[in-house]
Length: 197
Image 1 (cartoon, one colour):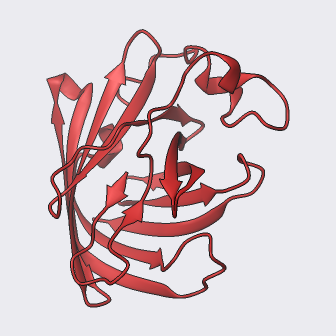
Image 2 (cartoon, one colour):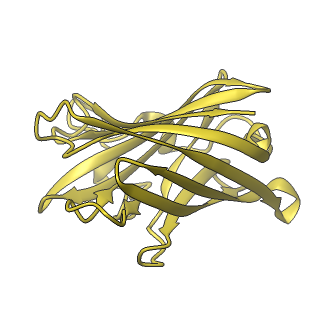
């Protein structure tokens, strides 16, 4: 997903701007395998209602690491709101994010689509700054935790991106984004969002 943030010299914050191959040599097992084996086969259960917890209005607090994968330890905080609406009977949803902070304003739209054949969800992002929809990150939920993976480019080099949905409850949840420049051997968290009712 690519986040273009008005008011920042950095120009953009990138996640998942390349499509995820769900089969083929990219999913060979071994230390260079970029995604968990769970993404190579259909999920064992129907997860069509897995995003139901997020439907509704939320207060949003997020922290964003400036200059990810450069060794930066500088974070900027934002506050605002998020509203998520179910569509297609809950097998898709639209989330609107509107936050301010760090001399910047972020407005974004997330699109989540459930694929009944693979039993996996995809997440794409669009932002108000450029209106472009990114290719999806793909994943699902198991044991109260959501994991989604995608590929991207950052500073001209290929990276992997990961979303984690954590601490899911009726009144809140946490979303963390991380990048990997070493094929998924290590991850650097660069975006932490806390959503509360």
